[in-house]
Amino acid sequence: MRNFGRDRGQSEVIGSLLLVAVGVVLVGVVAVLGFSLAGDTTRDPTTASLSSSVSAANLTLVHTAGNALPAAETVVVLRHGDDARRVRLSSLTTVAGGDDDRITAGDRYRLSHDVIQGELAVAVVHEASGAVLHTRQFWIADGIVGELITADAGSLGDFGGNYNDPSATTTVSDDGRRIEVTGNKWQLVEKNYTVTEDTVLTFEFRSTTEGAIHGIGFENAGTGQESGRVVRLSGVQNWGVNVSDYGGSYYRTGDGWTRYEVPIGEVYGDTNNLGDADSLIVVNDCDGNEGISCGSHDSAYRNVAVSESD
Image (cartoon, rainbow, N blue to C red):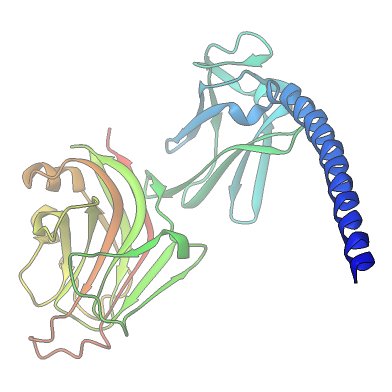
């Protein structure tokens, strides 16, 4: 038994020495890799920050901060439906800066597009590394261009200031462009935006049954249930800001998909709610006191976009 114990002790020592040796080798490998990656970091195009905006005819791209980019290796991709267009920044019209082959902070480029109606997706890619530097989605309708607000499972949250029926559901489809709520539910969609007096919210709305409140607006963390933040499109309860007070038509069941252009900045200016928001909110409310079947009424929104009027 004593011999067995000594043999086991020797194995532990040898094992420890082997682990130390392996650890030293690993440290060396990690150090080599670390120095190698550190050298590449100074050339990493992902440290560049860009922004984009779209008018009815043009895309404007701005390098806002970070590393310079080689114009010949940087591509802007415009996608509309099944059509994709790739253009090197070196061939774009320069609006400001861009006098050499390097794109630096403050440089501004312009590219025309021919999208009249529908989604325009923008991506900027550094070809050599495959790094995607910038993405943004826009929705163009009737000459109005807005930034699309899309949803997915990670962006959804329940509004804590109001009861949400556990049986209520939210369905997201069309690549996040359509949000449908059934049952008593106040649904948040993560979206950071600063609402100004010029902010406009455009979308299409449909409901097959009338509940208490069908509405839309912007919310901010920590705020309670505020009627001045929700624009009421339909419903039997007199709560929220009636869309008809700001040029929209009050929705009636059977109207089908109806497009709205809500001057949400004007609404919020009148109700003292201008400023930062962290979520879009869609309201499908039924308190059960209006003789309505709360489990059946619904609200569907699609192509929700936010923009700033000229």
